[in-house]
Amino acid sequence: MGLALKSFERLSRHPDICMVSVDIFDTLLLRTTMPETVKFGKFGKEKEKLLQSMNQGAVVGSKYLHLLRVYAARAAYRNRRLINGAREATLDEIYDVMFSCISAEMEINPKDVDDLYNQFRKVELTLEDFDLSVNHQLKKILTNASDHGKRVVAISDMYLSYEDVKELLTLKGVWDLFDNVYVSSEFGYGKASGCLYED
Image (cartoon, rainbow, N blue to C red; front, side):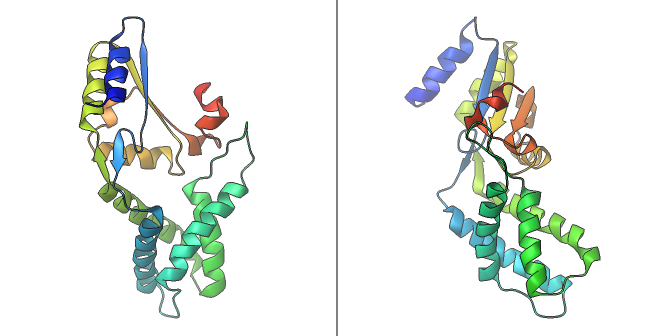
């Protein structure tokens, strides 16, 4: 066990501590070293397949979808108001930008848009799940804290929704560790604002 985890474990056992808080991604759920650009490339390939299956005409390519996913995220974040120097977009807002651009390139039946949103989200969650593994040492510390009557909460800066994060935590078998989970996309600002801790 590393020094930081030993220190965290010691603090979590202290009798004056009544609540233990942990970050989710890259702390409890560890990502591989796959760069985000590579991950977005995989998103692009899977999303191209979805568009091909739903459209008989011309379909935008995976490279376009890869780059569009990157730029749509930037645009969605820039459209969000800064709150104490921090802001957070949602995956739906990112998809709004993407579908606005995709619709300019190819014809999509309006009836299919909701289904495509859900299918795109499923692609992202499947790849996130594949890329994540549980930090079992930290899980043990949190379990011990909970067993000793301490509240255990998670706070995450993430564009995924609360329900998306819940699904990933459930898939990894750690959802039941927490009394509360706070996801920045539900509030519109991240941890850096300081406001997330007030909620």
